[in-house]
Amino acid sequence: MEDELLGKKEAALFLGLDSRAFDNYFRNAQEFPSLDRPKGNSRFRFRKSVLNEWQTEHKWRTVALDLDEYLLCLDFALAMHFRGYVASDWGTGRQREFGQKITNWIKGQLGEVAVKKFLEKNFGVKIQLDFGIHPKIVPQDIIGIEENGRIRNPGVNVAIKSSKPKSSYLVLSPSEVSRPERRSDIYIFCRVDIPDDHLLRLTRRTIIKAVGDKQHFSLYRDEIPSFSELSCEIAGFCPIDELEERMSIPGQDFDGPRFVRQSGLLRRSKKEWDQLVKRL
Image 1 (cartoon, one colour):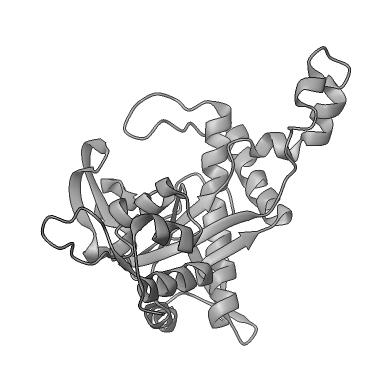
Image 2 (cartoon, one colour):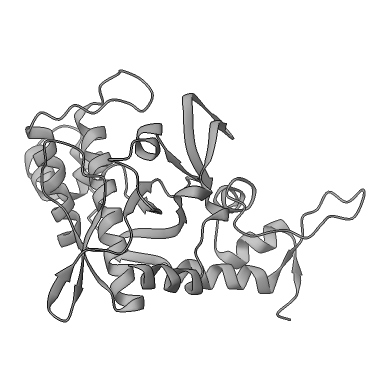
């Protein structure tokens, strides 16, 4: 039955999620609701039809990124590194180490590439991204719209923000929202699933050749993973006036005010995306 009621374990199994991923989407992100529990009943119940709708929409919003697209973003990240750009851990003065810097830059650019693919595939809209290296941060990520062989300026200013797959909130610093030169009209939130060993995967053959005659190579020879497609979910978007100013989100205290939006409250339906596309 389409409107069959499922318990929490059954719902997670139906969606093909492990319990932690399910809890993240349900409790933290609040992307799909449970029914009100009867008094004295500790069990959560979920409508199968609601879960099926969420799953279908989630798949529609998820884009696969290939090796060439990854390399485009790696090239940008390395250019940022070798130009001497200093990146610090968010909210601290501690400088990030090389691997973390490269991963974060790649993740940010992959989100932009994913949005480009998503819009072209589902709405026939071709956008231009700026992968140039500039002296200052470029506030807008969509810099042009291709129409009839020409490039025009977007109708609205759009920033694309990327985070980890389990991130439940779009989080922006005050400078991204309060400063007129950096503020955008629309913020798109992406969840990029890039493995922490992506550089190892990329250099797998070189690594194997380098350590193939070493003492412990036989212990991990078959464990070194190959590079595979990366998944990016376009979680949704929100206008600037829907951001909330907060000092914390569940599980994280900020060192100052941040502007946030819970992913379950983002605009993400096909109808809402179509409205945004028309504004572009």
